[in-house]
Image (tube, one colour):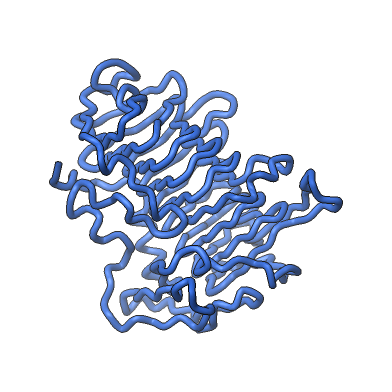
Length: 370
């Protein structure tokens, strides 16, 4: 099985027969030294968050990873979106600009054509369960906000310079993006920059795109050393690059499926620390999964690259990891230093099939509850 020592690479057995359901193991509590994880003999749901659809507000505070504290609009009123108009009474934009906490739900299905970025204020849940809402034209901007949950939406066809599906900057924190489908924007699908931190992206599907996800704006913003992001159970379906590309931040990737990239799967640049755990990397024409880029921090004398630890990753279809041994492994972070548990399974055919089917927007009913 291998252990969690951050200065070594470990690979879980490659089980691809698909005969038994995956079982989760959990990381050790942060006050314990990293040690060999134990497979739990109990039967688990084949994906995390099996309980969050039992009631409307059960999402709050349930994210795994760095965004685990995000409560969204838990303590606010319910706001009903009753129109697909870009603005005005009953619109999504009107709800997002309210300063008080809100749990936003939809009474309509269809496309909302955004003429400009939709700014989301703090303590908001945008909950697309029960309807099918597609945002197009522009995207969401999370600017200097905290405690935002975005669930079960589609983003497609954003146009204009610097237009991202979801743009998180600056100084935003406690964010959870779950079960969203994103494709075809002129810039990024999700960009996380300018000291935004404590973010989890889970169960999302990314497709038909080039620069998928950027974490860390550029080498001049060394304040981004504070950033921490978890990405898990996502499906990167033939997107070209940046799954993600990382500068400075600490990033935990687990149980994601990335296939048929056009340049690389994951890129580590200046001072980044990427912990890649039990992911599936399946190459198309481009075979190397991990790429390193060297850049210079403005407060350092020499340029540097980032670091990647690979534990239990599965490299399929001739994929070459491209992994370099970290030269500063003694200072490399481990996720258990930041959160006690997370659910992760060995990378198998079952996991691959699961992510293809259940990552992204889902046709699920709105849960009951006020």
